[in-house]
Amino acid sequence: MDRIALGVDIGGSGIKGAPVDLALGSLTEERVRIDTPQPSTPDAVAEVVSEIVSSFSYEGPVGCTLPSVVQHGVVNTAANIDDGWIGLDGRELLERRLKVPVALLNDADAAGIAEVTYGAAKNVPGLVCLLTFGTGIGSALFVDGVLVPNSEFGHLEFKGMDAENYASARTRKAENLSWEEWGGRVAEYLRHLERIITPDLFIIGGGVSRKLDEFREFIEVATPVVPARLRNSAGIVGAALTAAAD
Ligand code: BGC
Image (cartoon, rainbow, N blue to C red; front, side):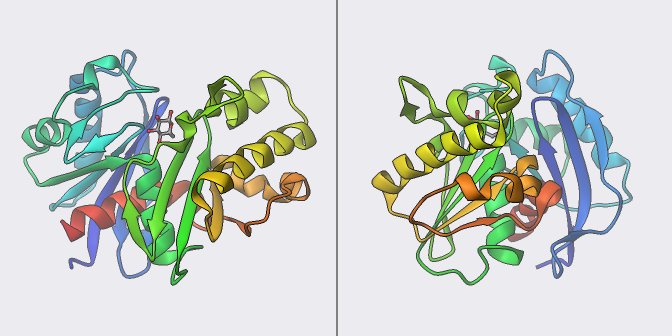
């Protein structure tokens, strides 16, 4: 495997990229961030990805994430990006634009791959479920370190709505919930997941993982809960790793 690969994390509000040292799982240079164009059409996003990639003196495969179900390069959903992505072969579009091999995968799956390789899920056997709490809820499911892609647990129906509308970090802010109130909602959601998949470990990712100490005491669940270790760079690192492994 090449020692360095480039990862780009495409989100609803920002697109961030950097080269990654694959031996260490860390960025080799300061990441570059550009606001996601609005509307976030495939061509407009591909243009920004190309700008980010060409800001580094890097040549080689590029890994990209999307907040979407991505099946063999084809984008099947678009929760926080333009609907124009749906049904599109996103990998092919990006390869045409960047003129290098591209790996395209779900953002939470990428974060999970980074945690399994370098972080909180390294060498953890059994069923591991990483959840990213942000604008939505992303999920990544691993069986003995092997990814089961596109689990999309944020869209399970819970309390008569999409689970992410009940317990995402966006909802905490939008409804002005205290840590206790929001932590209680996260616990209810995790207990629901426990009934469905009986995991061995939950990993809490997304920006809010930094604040786990604020709400850990309210997460009363049977499964051990730990914070993600790679924080902000997990998506970039997991994308780069996938590009290098393809
Ligand atoms: C999307 C997922 C994504 C998650 C986090 C959800 O709304 O459906 O694909 O992983 O948000 O960005």
